[in-house]
Image (cartoon, helix red, strand yellow):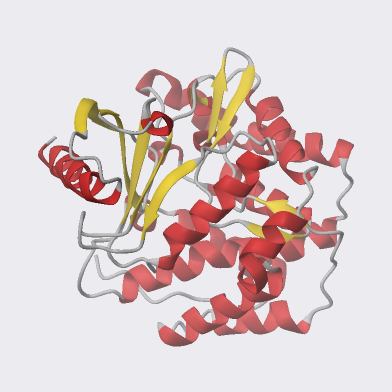
Length: 334
């Protein structure tokens, strides 16, 4: 709790200045919230703040190696979606300045409910509801706010730049494969890019929130489906934040859940096999590049539990199968 208390004290001091409210104090918490592999997340309440800040809040602090602009992108994304009526938490403050807390951070409203992962019955249906509702939104407001960075072409360009910067030569052939094939695009929609049961909140049987928006794109819905399908199928069960009593069920049901999810989406919006395969390669590259960067990093933040897990190896094998390309990653130094 020492780290959580340190962050909370830093936030209070910053808000006293930023809000011109010298009476800001901590009312409840801070309570660490699990779920993020590359952020620190705390729940808290404040007093002495404007009315918009009076309810339960979430503080989300990036790791120091992240691009500070990421918090501004998350702020823009979540507030546009909240304005459209989608259950994304509204961001009250985002700062790229690392000085107050040691890294960029956001403060947002805390949505009601608990993680979908803790309620396995009916999980595929709730996940589908969250994704289909997202894909039904008008994507033009978000496209206007985020611009080229949120397009699929921008996504590929950013991956290629990161591959070159980190000298991930074993992944360069996959970039070439993606660029060298005709892209099976459909009308663009808002794609979460990382939608899975730990990022979905449910209250009773009702979808109450969708969290974690740094990977949003305005792109073919098949990209979003591919991202979710890969996560459901390949993320190791031991990394998932569920009670130990439910982990055996997760291990047994992982492939079943992935199959039910994909079949359910296809019944509502058909996706041809080759289109899904293309976007599974594209979606896998985000995690593979991140794993490669982690393996190249010699100072700063240690690798996350996800980076240390077999997830990257599973994705790499899947990409090789789909492309026939001899993709590779640098060996892990740990």
